[in-house]
Length: 212
Figure (cartoon, rainbow, N blue to C red):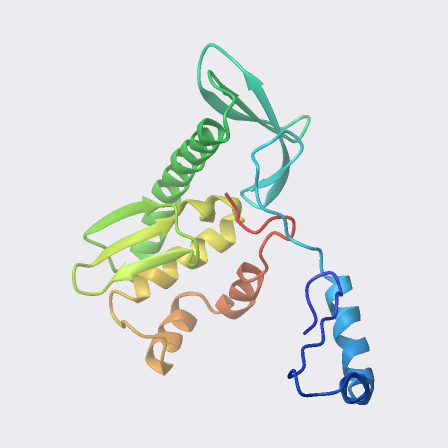
C-alpha cells in the first residue's frame, strides 16, 4: 500500500517468506515508483486546529487566519493584509470554530440572497425554502419532495461563478431529482459552461482536510 507522502507498506500472509514478499514488490517496481511520485506531488492534508497562520478561502480568495483575545466575539477580513481576523472572548478551538462558522454563514446568506434572484428569473424555478448548514461532503442539497434547498457553509469559500453554478444546479433538482441526461440538458440550457465550472468546483483547497 502506498500512503500519502510516499510511504510504502508491504503486507504479506504469515506463511509467505520474506524473499517471496520482496520479489513480489520488485515485480511491481514501476507501478510503485509511479504511485510514490504521485503521492509526493500531492500536499499532505492537515486537520484544522483553528490557529493563527492557517489558511482559509473566502469567495475564491486566500486569507491567513489571525486569532486574538477580545472582549467581544467577531470575525472579519482585512483585504489589505489578506488576513481573516477572528476575535473571541475565549481562545478555545470550539469558540474560534464557532466564530468562523458564523462568519461563513452570514457571508453565504448575503451571497445567496444577492445571486438567487438572477437564477430564479433565468430558470423560472423557485424553492419553498432556502437553508444553510455545515455540510461535509456536498456543496448543496435539494429535497425534491419538499422543494427545500440547502447550501453548505463551505460554499462561501468558492468563487462567485462557482456559487452561481451550485444555485443553478440545485434549482434544476426541483424539476429532475437525479443527474441523468434530462438533468444535464437542463443545466446546459441554463448555464452552457457548467461543465467547466463544475470541474473547478471539484478542486478543493489543498492545505486542510476540511474547508471549515
